[in-house]
Amino acid sequence: MKKIEIILLTILITSCDSFVEDKYIPGDLTPPALVSISAISKDSIKIVSNENIFLNSSSFCSNNGLEIIDFIENGHEITIKFNSELTPGNKYSAEYKILDSVGNSLWFIAEIYGYNSNLPKILINEFIVKGTKTNPNKIELYVISSGNMAGITIYNGTKESNDYSFIFPDMDVNEGEYIVIRTTSDNFPIPFIELDNINIKHDKKFLDNVRDIRIDDFKLSASSGTISIYNEPFGEIMDAVIYSKNLNDETKNSRNFGLTKVVERVDEIGECGEWISSNELINPEDVIYSNSSTTTRSLSRYRFTDTNSKSDWIIVASKEASFGYDNSEKAYE
Image (cartoon, rainbow, N blue to C red):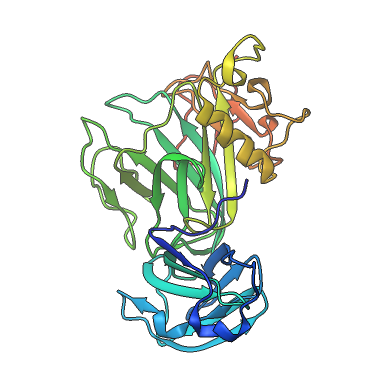
């Protein structure tokens, strides 16, 4: 099921609102349902419902200083233009009230993120899931085309179900660049992001000429899991990987992925078309086999191949992990 692209903090549903009281049709007491709300330009957002809707603009309230200067009602959609631009990647919270043609209303508080019109194209290119205090888990992204990372979100999981997430700040990246995301650990407890200067020696693991990022609590399961990237926290998927140390076993629960939440995330990625299986359902033997990986034998994309399948990936030979540089082509045997 597709998750509504909104954080619903509070909902107050009323029926037969006096705003359009003269249009009331006896028997229709169902309020409009919210399908999505998202930024569509630097200063505008779009609300989508399951039926024709109208905006009660007098009920709008924002804690970010936003004011509505214009809006267009077009069937199931309302486009709203604000008095100022929404900064890419920044979060904006506001109250809205929409009504259907007979006056049933939906009041909600939504969080949206500023529109990024200059998104890069990126791939998950290398990662380890068996990190230690001295060599914590890390993920490498490869920038295929230049752009700005503001608002792009990486999940340990998916946007609908995740254990940890990280929203990138306003940060220009260039084609061919590597971004190495490292989790904090006892030995490396302080988060840090290289923005303009990529040669800051924050700690001894940071590399010259590589954009290093150390973030809190982005712990990956050593057993089975998913990593996914979206253009904004509740936006469109950009890339995803699925891995497991297990093999198919019909006698085990959760398709032998270990946990129900992992199966749900696997299926979500499959439904998005970001992972391909020969069967209707994705099983452990359809994903990246991670059992032989270590901190020096990373899970690495082979020559930037991107068919959304396990064939794109190898476990490199011992000491061939190459975070921040071209991936090794030496496979572990």
